[in-house]
Length: 537
Image (cartoon, rainbow, N blue to C red; front, side, top):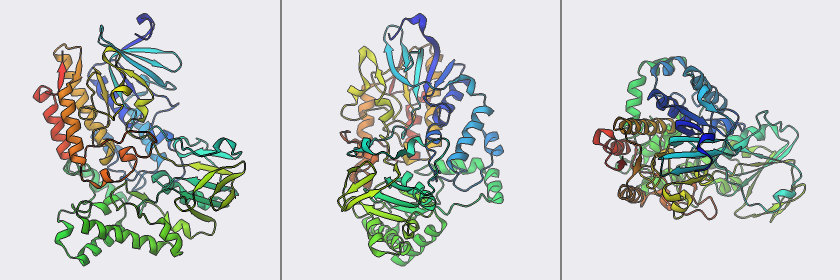
């Protein structure tokens, strides 16, 4: 035990994290009659959408889909202002949900969890925060997010730089004024691609330091059409069911006819149509778009041509074109004027593959091509995905088994929710689940519902312990690996495979069988079938 039992605050369940996942976990567990507390390290709720306040931040899933589905009243009464909601609007939505369902009274802010130890004798978890507070609970639910721990880049001389250093993942609440400033940004993933055009409009000069170019498609964001929203709300249930039948739990108007079966000219027209519509629907034009080499090459070449059309200087366009992997190998980005930004006179692209970054200096940065004076450095360098948050908490299960030790060769889980040797511990959208390959809000609901149903099942049996069986866990890990074999994601270095974090074991972190297949797995593993992969005692 961490502290004397009498000094601990005792609950049925402790949820770690107050983003989309933590709020819904609180709602479901509280409705089961469980005394539940949510511990949140930030000074307000919102998770990802609280921390990532950088300029230009917005969702790449359409607003009407990137939202809770558990309450039709909520779906009907909330109105979105844009096709793709901004960070600010999503945060307002999350706060509205918290108030509407009276969730704040069970949320403790400014509480960073540092330890979670399982006590075999009592079958309880002892959870400690950085400020010394201790909580005891039968169940602990980690709603810590897939992308919540930023990667600190290894840049020589970073401490020597006398200017201001900003991180997209912990952007100042008061905002930043770039007027008259010389700015450099490192990172051209989704965060970098979103904030680059906005910073360029304000700064005196912007240097974009590109490590690896990414594919990005236009978002075509626009104000919400009231008639479209009204029609959608009239058929919300049908839309949600239709989304569940897709691999991504998103309605992207996915094509059903393989691209290999149609002519080059027809594919070209369809790519152009989807490019003009905007959004992630581009990669759903054909079901074989990321598996058939001919179709994938056509899509890849199409985007290469589009980049060349947008960027006036051929030598700059050539540096912006990804050459190390085809479209679909990494997360596709959605932008609002990213490529066009490089036509501005006050923007300089520095390709670190050919002009390496040597380090920071007192007044700026130095590359193989020389030194550049800047006032501000923006780090948009990504996250320690899937396992980053849990790896920074001292989690110990049966007989003091450390989760970090168990995961030394990569995260082994059952369904991406449970871990053998760690009773009554649950993860939401954990490694080994579809998580970021699906609509994350709906993936969260799926996990929370399964967890709540299993807890209710165990309580009905007056059981103290729910734990993943070792055999079921091994079988699941093997299934996740088998599904990943041969996919573009498995062949490409990215945060999907942990390649962006030095020393991180490469592992298949994602279930790639699609939402319908995963739903069947959850159904077969759930209370209706007496939870065959779990020990309940």
